[in-house]
Image (tube, rainbow, N blue to C red):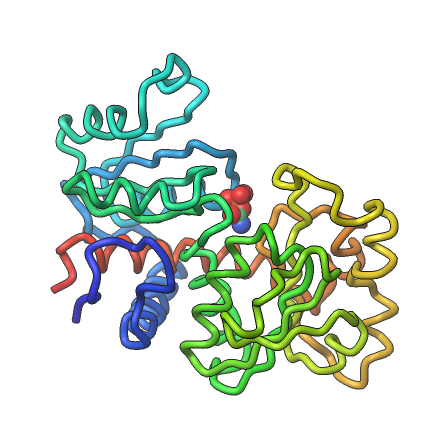
Length: 308
Ligand code: CP
């Protein structure tokens, strides 16, 4: 089986069949990653460039590791040490890299739509590793994989997405994916950090009360306050944000059930999530990171023309 798309630009463009295929393939690669020899020859002679115009730890290392596990040849691009710093355009940079016979491009960019623009102009497969405030599709997929691994299914699962929804590409990819797969989504945060028409536009519930939201959900996916994307004051202070919307031990202990806590990272400890929650057995944050490698292996493999 193969995906209905040549690129992974966003979850918005994927069908339910595509998502199910990626999650199923990731399960197989997760099994491979438990073996003593974790490397498979699936992408031998495929060359992939990792083009990161924005900082990253998890996504960049996870893609690099996934590529190595699949035996692909990889090259890494960091904007600060490239000719982009001398003013070269994105399109010129990519055209030059592709002339060296590169097959796939993994790209993170601060501009929403940058990977969509590239996909229109170059012949290689493009994988969006996060574009501005638009989407972060492999994060959405690895989050879904982790929830499915924990609960056995996504359908009917009650997922709360908590925090800075306004600036979050992770929130968008999670919402698209969870809606398609039949989960129930509530977003929670201060009114200034939740887009006004999100209920009508994206079919999610909105609750501004953290305690009520935690009482409702099976999973709390807590998002980072994106300090670098705030161009106006949208909440009074980090301390007050933590008091009103920080996920704390006491709040969880007062629930009559044990919910699962997720976070895409990097965490602002003591702001959106307290350390005694982030590091507790209720948290699956490091499992999310582990699952990211298998999910990215699945995406790379399925988009490589080697799968079918
Ligand atoms: N979750 C995530 O995208 O983390 P990085 O910014 O470290 O890649």
